[in-house]
Each structure stands twice: as structure tokens, then as C-alpha cells.
Amino acid sequence: MSGWGCPHSHNDRCNLLHLPCEPGIKGCVLYGQFTFSDPASPSNEAVERRRERETKKEKKEDLPRGD
Ligand code: SF4
Image (cartoon, rainbow, N blue to C red; front, top):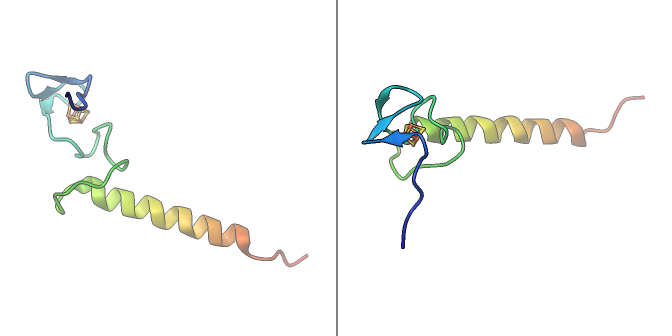
């Protein structure tokens, strides 16, 4: 069984960021898309901010219009 392999990873380096591959760092394709088990992952905060924005937007859309 094989796991997901990032197409930008080559020899444990990121071809997008020109840094060692660290899934979830800012600029990574996974940033803000997934919550990582490491609570220090910057992606986790980005996911949370996106969820908050979406919730605010949904609440705004649910408000009755004052026509
Ligand atoms: S840092 Fe992200 S985008 Fe870059 S190689 Fe790793 S998983 Fe892929």
C-alpha cells in the first residue's frame, strides 16, 4: 500500500519553495487545506481562519435583508 506523494517533492526537498519539504508550511500546496497532527503546523491556523471566514459569510447570507 502506498501513501500520497507530493509531486513537488524531490529527495525530500520542495521544488516549489526551494526548501526542505515540510508539509503544511506556508506556500506548501497543503497549507490551509488540511489539519495536521502537529499542533504547531501553520496549516492548522490557516484552516481555522478559513473556517471562521466561511462561517461568518454563511451567517451574513442567512440574515434577513432590511428591504
Ligand atoms: S513542502 Fe508541500 S508542496 Fe513542497 S514538496 Fe513538501 S508537501 Fe509538496
